[in-house]
Structures are given as C-alpha cells and as structure tokens.
Length: 151
Image 1 (cartoon, rainbow, N blue to C red):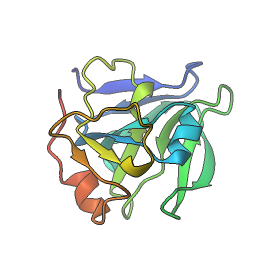
Image 2: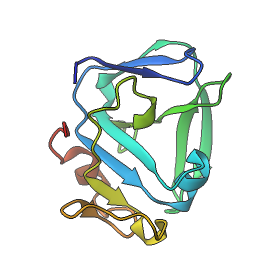
Image 3: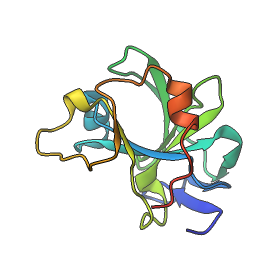
Image 4: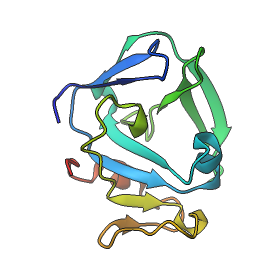
C-alpha cells in the first residue's frame, strides 16, 4: 500500500486522496447499506477527518436514516451516483470512505463487522474478526481505537 491512497467515483469526476493508512476497515451488514450498495454489505475504511482530501469534483450530499435511527450524510457523484464517503462522524473526528472506491483495493481486509443481526445468512464471518449485532456502544472507540489495517 502506497500513501497517499487515491480513489474516486466510477466516472472519475470525483477524486480524493487519503494521507494516512486507514485506522480500521469494517463491513456494515445493515439493511440500509445492503440497499445503498445493492449488495450484502458495505466496506468502509476509516481515517481521521484531516486525512481525507477531495482533489477533483464537487460531491452531492445525500441524507438517510440508518437502522440505528441516526441521520447519516454521504457524498455521491452528481453524474454517476457512486458513493465515495460519508460525512464526518463522531464530532467530525473520523471519516468513513467507501473502500470499493479506492484505486487499489488489493490490500483491503475488513477486521470488524457491524449490524451482523441483519447480515445475509450465506455470509460467513472470519474467525477472530470483531462482530457486533448492532451499532457498537462506543462508536468513537470503535472507529478510532483500532490499529491501522494493512492486511
């Protein structure tokens, strides 16, 4: 993995850089993420807010209500609709980047899973990964307390 990490939307009009190794890579299995991604889960790479730098384009902000009841904002490309990041979380300290929007995804290895109570029954979670049936109680600790993921 080479820092800065780069990524963007499908059409290439939104581009970004990450100036640090993600502190955590996790999967969310909530029904909202299943619908947004049209898949079984979403994969998120967590960085501190200051490590995320938009380098091209202007995203469109969309709000949704998560299974937890929290209102969550995320950024999509106004042209192709690809989601690249959510808004800053936990008092603006952390940003979740849609890991599939990274240019190089070969190093990705999620080590935590949230909202597992709504995961698809055919998804088998790896032994040793942290698992939470819903949202972790200590979301700040969850997002920022993990060591960098380089697996």
